[in-house]
Amino acid sequence: MRVLAVAPQPFFSSRGTPLSVYYRTLVMAEQGAEVDVLTYGVGKEIDVRGVRVLRIPRIRILEPVPIGPSWRKLLLDVLMVLWTIGLLLRNRYQAVDAHEEAVFWCRFLKPVFRFKLIYDMHSSLPQQLTNFEFTKSRLLIGAFRWLEDTSLATADIVIAVCPDLRDYALKVGTAPAKVHLIENSIFEDVRVRVPSSAAGNGAVQEPVRFGPGQRVILYAGTFEVYQGVELLVEAFARVSRELPEARLLLVGGSAAQVRKVEALVHFHGLGDRCVLTGHLPRRAAADYTRSADVLVSPRIHGTNTPLKIYEHLASGRPMVATAIWSHTQVLDESVCRLVEPDPASLARGLVDALTDEAGSRARIERALELFRREYARPVYERKVRRLLESLA
Image 1 (spheres, rainbow, N blue to C red):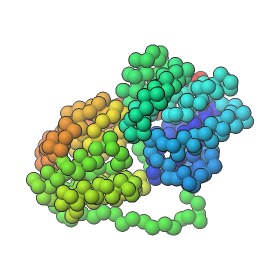
Image 2: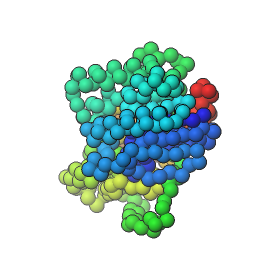
Image 3: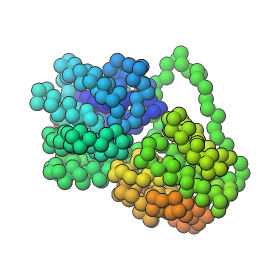
Image 4: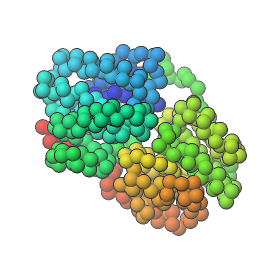
C-alpha cells in the first residue's frame, strides 16, 4: 500500500518536533506500507526504509515555525496545498494520512483523486485557537469547528490520539467502526540522517549537574501558557522552603519564554535552585528523565493527553500531575499523584513524591504494568496493523 502523509509541521526538528508523525510513519513502513511524507522545508532528514520525506520550499523569514496556530503556518500551508495537489497528480496513492489541519484541504481533494482519507486527529483544532490564544473570534472558531466536523464525516478512518478525541468524534456522529484510538505512546530514538560534512560540528551543551543529596524535580516540554510552567515555579517556591535539597530542572521553551520564567524564578529567590536549559535534543531530555527523582506535568487546562505522560509511565520514576482531563483519561491515583492545579496542592504532591518512598515505589510498579499492558510498542504496532488492514 502506498500512503501520502501530509504533515504541516517541521519534520524532523528540535522545535515542535512531530514525534507522532515520525512514529506513525515508522511503524506503517515496518508493516509493509510505502509512505511519502509531505512536510515543511525546515527539519532534519530521517533514515527509515520505506519512508520518503518531501518538502515544500524553505522560507527562512517565516522561521522558526511556532507550535500551534499562527499566520506563519497559514502562509506555509498555502504551499502545502499546492504541493499536495502536485503529488496527487504525479502519483497513485491508495490512502492519504492527513495530519491536523491538512485534513481541511485533503477532504476536498478526496473525491477528485479517489483515495481513502485518514484524519490523523492530534487535537481539536477549534480548541487550539483558544488554547494558544490565537483568536477569540466566534466566526473563525465556528468555521474551524464546521471544517473539523465535516472532515470527521468525510474521512474513511479517524485516528484519535487520546480517549477525549475519540469520544468527541463519536459524539458528532462519526461511525464507531472507523474511529481508531492510537495513542502517541512510543518514544524510542529517532533515526536522523546526519550528513558527513556536519558530523562533529556544532556546540554541545554541557549537561546540568547537581550536587550529592540534591533531589531533582523535572519538567520537560513546551512553555505554552496551558502547560502551567509558571504554576510549577510558584509551587516549587513552597517546596524549597520545606525541602531545601530540592532542585527544579525546566527543559524546553523558546528564548523569550525562558526569559519570562527566569524573571519569575528570580522573583521567588530560586536562582540557585532552579535551572532552565531551553530547547535540548530529545536524547538529552531523555537522559534527564531517567536521572530525575520526580517527573511533573503541571498542565492547567486542555483535553489532549501530553505525549510525555506515556514516557513518564515507562520511566520508573514517581509522577505528579494536575487532576485535569488531559491527565486523568490515562492516569489515576494508583500510578501517579494527582493534585489540583494550584500552587499549594502541586507543592504538597511534589513533597509527598520526594519523601514517601514506599508510596512512590508502589505507584511506579503499577505505572510500569499499565504501560506494558496498554501502551508499549507491541500494542502500538497491533493498532497500526489493524488500521492498515481496514484500509486494505
